[in-house]
Amino acid sequence: MIDYNPVRVPWQEAMDSLKPALDGYRSHWDRVYIGVTTSPEARWAQHAGNGWNKMRVLYEAFNPSIAKELEQDLIDYARRCNFRVAIENINPGGEGIQSHSRTHCLYVLVGNKQQA
Image 1 (spheres, one colour):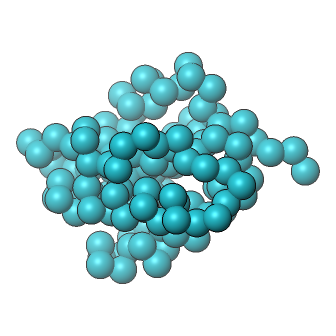
Image 2: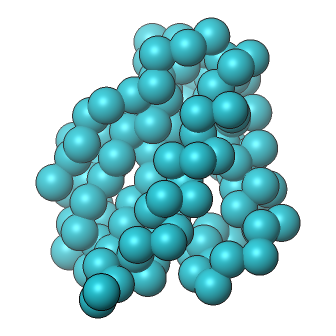
């Protein structure tokens, strides 16, 4: 399932909205992964069979360098937070960005919803 509901703010202000969104997912799900893609549908098709329940598109950037910076900043933020659930990212972000595309979507994958 793809939840396409990106934050609609200038990229310089995006982290103020992205951090609380990520915190919310990390407090309700046992698996979290942050990424960037030019095609949310194709990327979800790659991930859906690996135990992920949902993909949420957090931000849509029209420049690959903006997408890379936001992804790296969000991964860095997630690693510095003292949450019970660590993100599953191994790399610092920006490795899969394709500069020839018009749009780049920053997303979060979540899996294994926590029981209340």
